[in-house]
Length: 387
Image (cartoon, rainbow, N blue to C red; front, side):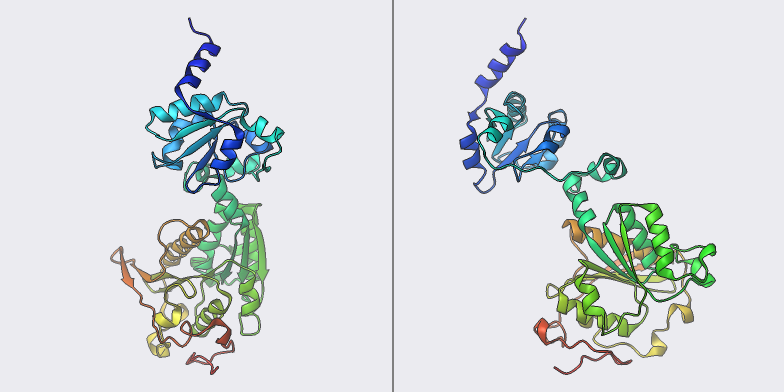
């Protein structure tokens, strides 16, 4: 009966090994992937920068999602070079055509003084909390860390801001800024699910912070109990990566649009009316802006507010959730954003439709250099200020 040493010798005879020096040179070549097949506790103590981490026990089940191309050049390493040899044979049997194992493993690499780093990893409690995210190859630990590093500003803690904030906090977005200068009113509770009856009369930013902090202590909730205005919009946007727009008036939307073009901050837009909702994404100078979409506000009689026309309470929950999804996609670089597309939801029909939004080459906001955009208060016409 063959021993472990016999099996290892046979395996090494069937694969190709490279030295640490050869592996160091290979990793500089375009397209080459270094695969760390050690256990999590080993990986946490140090790794080769740029490596893809997948424990040997999960290699067969995860490799196709992590490295879909069978012709991708792979350099596999473990601690000493034995597990990586077995991994190389397994991947060859799975159809990978350019696989090598690094002799001596990470221990020799480190002893030789080659580049290595201690990776930033999730804490055990975070691994448990975000376990369903970690199961997604498109997210994984790297994506979850990106979410924890992200900073998102929510314009409003109302109907749209409530569901968006809840799902962003639950997903582990590390910093959530909320700008709102209102107090909780009993009439808000039909749709603004951040708040409750015990907080009627309380500042909305304070109520939102209590709810979100209780949901996820990882999240830093920053309250901006102020009105969004020309005097603070640029400074506020400069502190965040993305803005989730839950504004309920046109001057705020145009002000936000023009400031976002100046700061380069993507805006995830949402709006609701009675039984209908809309969502899109405005990526500064990479697609249309809000002025391309709506060059000027409609007459007030054609665009009544929810306070005047009413809204079905569930509707902002749906649109706000879509906004949260778009924000997360932007953070992770996943899929196709709604930039250049308008998603329209009709609750009575239970239908979604998508319309193309074209960028206006003569747009008075996004067709000019960012430094030439003038930020000032807008009247009801919301027209750009002269340069």
